[in-house]
Image (tube, rainbow, N blue to C red; front, side, top):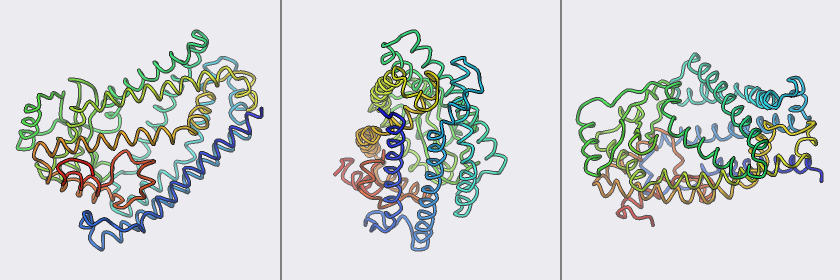
Amino acid sequence: MNFKGFALAAFILSYLYRLTLAVIHLRSADNPVPENVKDVYDEETYRKWRAYHAEKARFGILESTASFLIELALLALNAYAAFASLFGKHPVTQTFAVLLLSSLAELLLTPFAWHETMVIEEKYGFNKSTAKTFWADQAKGFVISLGLMTGIGAVLWWLWQTMGDWLIVAFAVFMTLFALAVSFLYPVFSRIFNKFTPLEDGELKEKLTALLQKNGYQVRAVQVMDASRRTTKSNAYFSGFGKMKTIVLYDTLVEAMTPGEICAVFAHEMGHGLNKDTLKNQILTFVQMAVLGVLAWLTLRTPACFTSFGFEGVNAGFALILIMSVEFALISPLFGLLINARSRRAEYRADAQAVREGYGKALVSALKKLARQNYADLAPSPLLVKLEYSHPTLSQRIAAIENGGNSL
């Protein structure tokens, strides 16, 4: 079997799939805007959105193509094996070498990140990053990513050597625990990039506290993140588990919305907690990790996966690249279809919680403000929504909220 030819063909097929979705996304700007969201943009802002949408979409295609060509060249020319040969024979240094080359290759895309942030986002009034902040983020991201991936690769090699065919279970369990740890420690990692301050005393905090107490819901803290250092866009999210949950509000959200609108967003986030969406997501995560375990087992026990790309033997770092960029990439659209469908249902349920708390109208107002601030696509392709969207469209959410929180 020509494994290299198969892997390259799979890699190209995966890129063509992503390219197709990107083209569909680009063309969605011509879709008619639903009546219930026509007031989100005025005529001038809508023209600006169309220009922003088109420029971002085209640039995304260009960046994705550049990334694809770089990775294709590294694979086709056996560059990973050649680079790893410079680092001796020890499995850990070999793993590090492959992942270092992969990370260095990603640095070639830094001009694209710069252009997107410092040119496109700046052009349309979203960027708040300075050059210093941008380069600091790039450096921190490079070190953290390389460190984590090298650690995962070393663990994968150790599990393969010690567990053998039990690798499927062992790697799935390890990756699930790793995902849980990242989620739990997300506030710690976030502090590397942002500053967090407790929500100030006042009307908003009183309303949020009353909402929590009414539902017997506990969180460790409600914090405000200095998102305005980088962007004008707004968001809010949960992090952590159980009583250690933290609700984070972007400072841009706090500044742009009324207390009622923020409570509506808060009630939505609380709805995720009450519906145990985080726990359900972890179950799905384990299923995905089990699939990765199977792929890792099949890859490591197949010498051709490595020799056909110039390696003398197994390399755990290259195994990770094959698993994520080639093997899992082929089946990830199916996972995305299923997981995103469940996620969209969860969003409807969380919106319904806000409706039950009496914040239905405020949530509609808040969602429209968020869409306006974030330059949301008001009429994306229905196919793209099914395949890629973890949230229903704004129009669908508003229709459900106005229907008493029940999706149509």
